[in-house]
Image 1 (cartoon, rainbow, N blue to C red):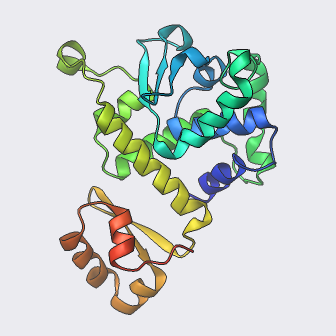
Image 2 (cartoon, rainbow, N blue to C red):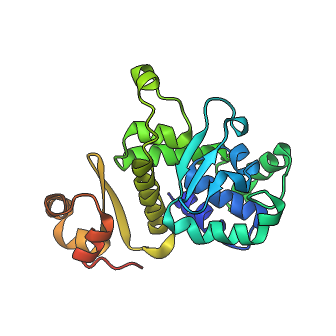
Image 3 (cartoon, rainbow, N blue to C red):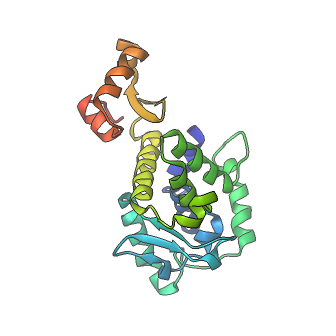
Length: 234
């Protein structure tokens, strides 16, 4: 989580040029392929319904991907539109795939990470974290643009937009939690749910005594948890 926090903070800093910082932010939030962001045009973005539709020609295979845009990202997308709408491209220009890939391979060094990672690893991080948070596997698969298997692939044509939006909203909340806005919050995985408690509460009550009341009272909304238990936010 430390590396992810570094990545998320750097995507809104001056460490990288605007093109790459914006690309990194989009890759973290949506868990998309770099090609989907690199080729993205404003025709794909419905800023009235706040939906991003990736056409199949911008993918490595499969059908189009329909992703809802979490509200926390609206100002960011609007700022990109204000700056790049006349170019036709989401990021303002079309860079070669080799250029973007080469940049991506060097990010870990710029951030001082000991182990190397690639842009594709951001997809794995999103998938693993959402699954650990209790998001239904088929929702995670659709966010990644994977085809559903078996009978679901044949008969189930739902896009699960409300479920995908809920997942992305929770993902954005997690990114804010780990990136420094809630420095004294510990993330606990309990079964298929995640809970947030402060160091003080854990020390005062003990893990078992702290988690059980949370499970009984809260139904998975960390914002309600923070309010009810007066958890400080940094």
